[in-house]
Image (cartoon, rainbow, N blue to C red; front, side, top):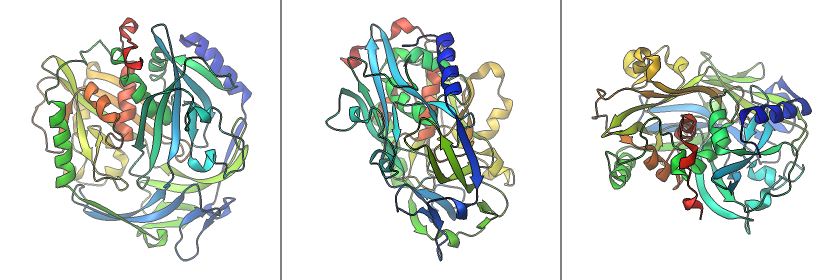
Length: 449
């Protein structure tokens, strides 16, 4: 078990030296095991499993553009993102893995105990079994602490969900190379390091951290009465689902205007948004040592921000009922700002994301959190977002547009337990906020017993 940064750095350096990786870019048509279909131009695996890249036609009354068509990843299977934890004394430890993904900027990042698609853990790839999987599938070994179906990036996935599950075990299972027990307070510290704790870990850790109210920072008062009762927050969310509309219809990729495959890469005519190409991968320590796949690369770094302020002595964050192309149920609760600014460089000011320009006048002392983190490296290539929490001060108005709401982190954690309410960006950013200083002695294990 590791509690301090020095020991972690020693362990992680050993993992980096022990693994060899190779990721080589190839044209979509030359991606082994995958085809670009005649007639539709859809990109899919020969087995019909894993995922595909298709077109989607979107109509909504909750975006600056009421309808559009775009490429999107279709992955209807529900994967498992599972974290084993142990409570030892007054500390909580998570079993994490140093795992390579083809899209990771630095190859190795910290992943949950289990991070596997259904195609992977059912052996479609013909590889090795997924370690520790039996702890997360019935009859599971251990006690369920958190279990919810959660969405992923609605801008790039169509209605994709994974099962986020946290299991407490009384004793540590047999150790394996590449895995290590890390304390939650150390993980909170590691969240300050760019591109280290992967997206899947950050998403699952949101459930772990909120099981321990004391793990939320005490530097600013995050705990206490909320300006809106929880029932009112739920009513606000239902209002948004009732007020707005969203329809999605799959179409052939070849019918998406302004997009096409050139030189083996799917790109937008103006070079905006993202591209999709193939990669050939070699990776020691994975269930399969070599494979090929398509992968999506955004055009630039994104921005994910909570604007926050103190209300009645309690710090609140401003959340947005957000609609994306692939959102499953009209809206999800997202951060105040979630966008790729490069995609708006050509549009007039009134079409830029709301509140984005506020960041230009922010003082450094008002930034509570600021770090760059990677998105999921199994589907996205070098996809980064700048995660920020900004205190806009008590002069910032309490009155906000109807699809925004002030809530506390405790309320966000409660919403997270229901599944498919809080989007991936907000869950990851909420986990990052635990890196703010807190008193470890406040950790309580009552919610685990």
